[in-house]
Amino acid sequence: MRKILLKSALYAILVIGAGITLTPILWMLSASFMKMGEANTFPPHFLPHHLTLEHYIALFTRLSLARYVFNSLLLAAIVTLVSLLLNSMAGYAFAKLRFPGRNRIFKTLLAAMVIPAQVTMLPLFLMLNKMGLINTYMGVIIPGMASIFGIFLIRQYALSIPDSLLDAARIDGASDLRVYVSVILPLCKPILITLAIFTFMGTWNDFLWPLIVMTDDSMYTLPVALANLSGEHVQDTELMMAGSVVTILPVMLLFLSLQKYYISGILAGGVKE
Amino acid sequence: MKGNKEQMAKARFKIVSRREEGTASSLLASWFFLGPALLVIVVFFFLPVLAAFLMSFTDFDIYSLGNFQYARLIGLRNYTQIFHDPLFWKALQNTFYFVVVGGPLSIAVSLCAAMLIHSKLVKYKGVFRVVYFAPVVTTLVAVAVVWRFVYHPRFGLLNYAFGLLGISPVDWLGDPFWAMPAIIVLAVWKNFGYTMIIFLAGLQNISESLYEAARIDGASAWQQFKHVTLPMLAPTTLFISVITMIGYFQLFAEPYVMTQGGPLNRTLSIVLLMYQQGFRWWNMGYSAALAFVLFLVILAASLVQFRIQKGEAA
Image (tube, rainbow over all chains, first blue to last red; front, side):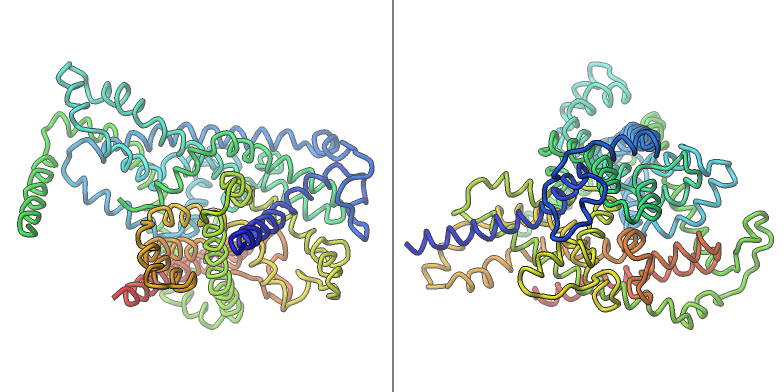
């Protein structure tokens, strides 16, 4: 009897918690389909009385949201691909190649992870400005091309690959490049997928740096465009909700389809060796 | 036995260090693989850190933007100015408020969620896990926009829910007292799922036999939590507190989107102040100094946290 009571209490708390967690997301979705002004009523409507797509249509016609979706997609995709290549190469070097100073360089990189990115932003801005890269895609791509965290993640994973496998390949005459391409990369696939999701989402969701680098309206990423729109359209609740849905939906779907990899990534970064 | 282990470790170390020396051909290969990433990190991370440090001792401003030679060395003046700037103290105070209240609150919520889901009585763990995790993968700017409407004084869901309980409406983001708590609630909602996953893994690593032994000794549920769960989770908790704290010190997008630092500068954070000084007023020397103060604050706070938790463990 006591067990049943306890069990119902646990479920009650979990369900209420889930309700609270989902409410803002569900309300955003629902309000995005409401007619103009319907979200600003009291008592609030939880479901639209008349479904409408007018806000999505307005976003993609009048407010050129397609452009921002394109910018965000392009930047996230390029940063992900380039950083995956560079980080996996460096991770392989740190895990499996021997060279003088290897441990010292690796430790220096790890120690540098405590420096917050904001410290670099002012000189980085000036540098890119001198190079004429402010307000270009390169301005966002360049600082994202490699990351210490990414190198760390891949190195830890590659360490678990037995040396005997690599030695076998080398005895067969494989070069280091060959070993990287046909042994390391295939075996590191799970961590590469994990890192790809992390990087893609991180770039997609990033706000401060694109806000600084992209000064021209046509170069905005979705979060920057959304923050900008929300300043101008404070009253257009339904429109802003539709904009938020478009911003959140792609990463949400990505997460739901590759959940397993994402969660194992959190644990790989979180649990010490 | 112990001596044997030490010897093995030493021998292993020797092998590792001999391996590190390598040969000439593998040196070339190593730099081929390491070079590109290291070049990017050195040029676009380490160099800017160094430059920011130098910049923080100059009066770099909008005139220097066109010609760097206009910037002059002014010693520690930016730093002394920071300590005389009431806005900085306000921002520091607000940021600490956010970290000291928001951090432990997120950790507590995520631990509760993890323990509920971990409970043997609960099924559908996967479903609850995904639901609680969902806010983590959302875009911060987008959910800040959404929550701004949740907090709307007249039409917001929060005041509606409170109205049902008979509590009169509050202008959450417009009230100097409530604005920061409102931002904290958003941050907890957005972040607890991430640390919940780490706690869940930590809980799974605690051996069931420990709980059995505690039960045989007659320990209550609370005593089991206090004397088994918490100590066993200590390393996980330390890791989580440090990453949560570091992240929370960098508060920016929430006040940028929801309050612009207002009302009465009650939600102005250090990073927001840094952004305004550097990229709105182009006081880049001053802003660089602010960035370094933030870095030192984070560093000091992390060290304190390691020290405290180590002290507790001993």
